[in-house]
Image (cartoon, rainbow, N blue to C red; front, top):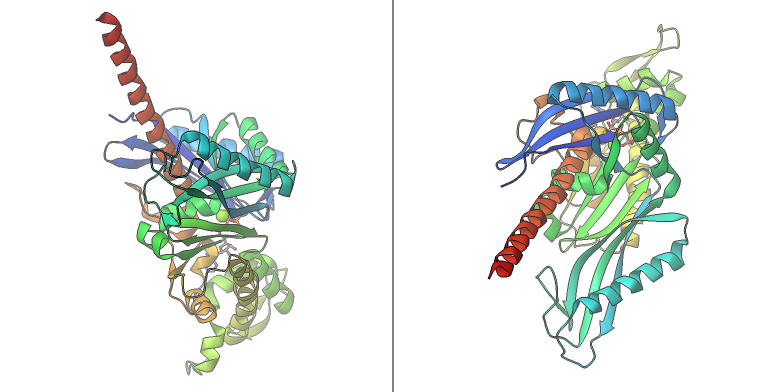
Length: 417
Ligand SMILES: Nc1ncnc2c1ncn2[C@@H]1O[C@H](COP(=O)(O)OP(=O)(O)OP(=O)(O)O)[C@@H](O)[C@H]1O
Ligand SMILES: [Mg+2]
């Protein structure tokens, strides 16, 4: 039986804190509390805490709201991290089994793990913290195994592919500090992109190979899957805010007006609009100045051109390069899935499809029971994925707990005879 335990995830993004608490039930994960707090100031910049006091205060309020809905204090929380200082690479490592054809043991796997750890330390020293080492698959004598562990199988050469996610130490310490100041403690830390993948991708998409991109306000996180394995995790310090800043600079309007114009009137697929010479008459949009007065007008076409230029740069330049480094996209990636608030930009799927020439869809959250419609949008996938990942760990612990209870009972029975 599964404990009906509350699992909470908090996403501290550049634009907002979103908290979600769920009950782990036999039927699945049921949402019992949610709270969204949008920031009015820049207290988080490019995914990194910029004002510890203010973020702690906001977090305190979010936890209080969750407590009121859940009916009990929220102490242990799971958080997501990303944002420019996170990076993940695949380490393929192999050893010869001596004598040849012997049964593979746990100590062979430990040897491979130590080899990976040595490589990470040599590459990064102590500047980066190893967040996760996730064995992806094992290859015995060049044959990909499908079992979770190769222990007990026979082989001459064992290869292990491990996805290692590292992050800068200081941003994580700052988040932990905020959580402590808000009266809670960190139970688990999960990479944003990994969490978003959990909330949006199907197992089939992971197997076929896909690229997940979460474009928020200050950062863009990505995760590449190939053959069901995580091939590359990366994050860049550019997001929707850079689009707003461009509009603001070009049209001499404050950033908050620029953001509204982007959301309401722009399309990202300006390249396609131009090629197809879409005939609909361009809309004239009012441009506001600092005092809130109309200072000029701009056509929707010109506005779209500004939005297109920045999003094209992020995808066509940075993301493409990052993915090409992992040298797997061509012909082997089935689809691109876009998430994060900026994925709601009109025409963004069409633009990204025109750059990569593969199908693109919006990543919406799934996997929870009772999720309010207000949160069924791409900007909530990170917190939702984090709660899903945390629940998987909880299930594992529960299973191990049951296993342990059975072992203890068996021990008692044996002792009694
Ligand atoms: N309809 C829309 N069209 C275009 N952009 C949108 C739309 N709705 C939201 N956005 C943009 O999405 C961004 C916020 O997304 P999100 O909530 O995912 O960011 P975040 O998680 O706070 O930030 P980050 O992950 O970068 O730290 C903002 O830049 C906002 O302008
Ligand atoms: Mg985000």
